[in-house]
Amino acid sequence: MEHYATGQQVYAAGLIFARLGAILMLIPGLGENFVPAMVRLAFAFLFALVLFPIVGPSVPAVPADVGGVAGAIIKEVLIGLTLGAVLKLFMTSLSVAGEIISIQTTLSFAQTANPMQATPSTTLGTFLGLLGMVLIMSTNLHHLFLSAIVRSYVLFPFHKAVPVRDAAELAVRTTGESFALGLQLAAPVMAFAFIFNIATGLVGRAMPQFQIFFVATPLLVLTSLSIFALSLGAIDTSGLSNLPYLFKGSLNADTTANTISINVRTKTPTELAFNKAEAAAFNAIYTALPQDPGIQTALITATDRKGLISAYDQLLPNSSGDVFNTALGMSRAVSRAAADRFDLSTQRDEEDDEDFVVSGFWASEFYSGIEQDKQDNNGYHSAGLGVIGGYDFGGTGVTLSAASSNITRPHQVGDSLNSVSVFEGSVYAEPRFGALSIDARLGAGYLKASNRRQMVAQVVSGDLSTTSTVSRTADGDWSGYDLTAHLGAGLQLDVNRRLFFQPRIYADVFHMHENAYNERNGGLGYDFNVSARDGTQTNGTASLVTGLRFGNQFVVSPQIEVGYDKVITGGPGATTARFAYGGPAFTVAANRIDGAAMGRLTLRGDGNYVHFSLQAGGEYNSNYHSLDAKAVFRLTF
Image (cartoon, rainbow, N blue to C red):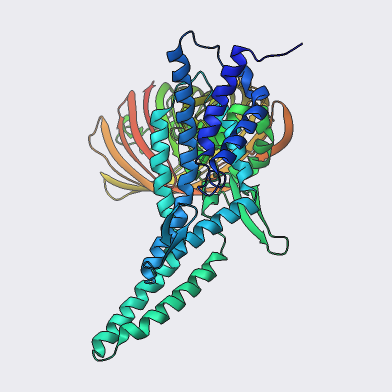
């Protein structure tokens, strides 16, 4: 029984042959003019038969009219010619290099038959063309060409239109890169010829009777060809610069085995210029990449450090010390409000120099903000509001406070947000011994925090035709507590009735415990399981207050305070985490703030029964600054 191919099979084989035939007419090596056309067509036919079982099933049905068949064939021929031409353009760099070197060495008139182009060309151009062809065949580079042909049916399937715009951009870019490569190959000879011609020109100018041309030309040819021969042994590694930024490549030549090996490895954190937090998490993050293909693609396709860091930093857990420092800032705001002892001199008898001891309610509202630049860990911005209520028994008292703050990361693409709420109670004492005043406070608070950690990264497809967005969002909630202690002292120095100075020193000890928590909703390759963390920090501050007094029954006092706040010991606790899927645990240290200059402006008003205080100020150093403001209102009776 005889077997015949169906119409669909013939149509499919014809389309495959159309593309392969067009490519093989131009591809370096097999597509050269010295290869007979019948050999190229025969190879294309055999290659089409090999690919038919693989590619044939994806060929669409036979069109109903002749025009549809002709259009499909023309489209395949155009794709084949485009791919073949792009590969052919790479070989023009050798011709460009040969022509440039020939011009520089006065050998451009020496023409010889070039089997690569079927037209005469310079001797060096012909030599480089043949050398390039030998290297392609000896290094099996033509196998990559054939593999690319097979891959073309994935990038340019039969049902997809011809990417004319992309093809034109690729052709222009490839042409430019080919000429640039030709200039790079000829650069050593060009540099030498430029210097040599300047030197011979100076000699000819100095000695006009000397026949410099006849002496210099042979020397120029001999020396230039020697430099050219030496440069042929160099290995060009410029192509390795196109590797993704995460990887580093190197070329190694083994002259004994006549092989060239390419080694590609992941860069170390030092080579990537990572900070401490990025370096500590690197092994865990790199190990977790296969758990999330989207995140993996975002990292390994980044072409520069900015793109890699933008995506990588969004993978770090909440670990920069933002929650700790935000809660610390709110706690210190309560200490400043409680220590704001009002001037009761307006309630004394003229014959009595001692202050009355009175009691009363007081309330305060405050703002606390922090701006931390990226240092050992990610930067952040926090802004919070709080209210304080207190009752003063006359030198001692109690406070209740509540504050809430939002923490963002303005330098990251993702919309990450932390919300922190702190409820704190404390007792305080403010004894006075003449001009010396003491203030002390002990407090404890409850912390509630929530975390939305979001990653957003742009990923460009391999053929540069499309851009997609990788987005992940992880949510987490945890609680904790804080303990705080404050002790300060100030010495009132009255210059006269209106002007006074008050040097102050005070210390704050703050401890915070945060419970462990597990993130959710981001996937196994993005969510973290975060262990409990503890942090303790001791601050010491020295400052000088300069103030004025105006009024009698109601005293208004503008004041300015300048000083320095120093972190004596400790800091935010380190964060230990691991990905939700498992993998290695890692510990990330928070940003550390060693100290900052501080300054505050205060406007106070003290009467018989009503007292108020308005204050604004902050702390500043090169990578950290905080702002705070408060308003205190007090009634005494």
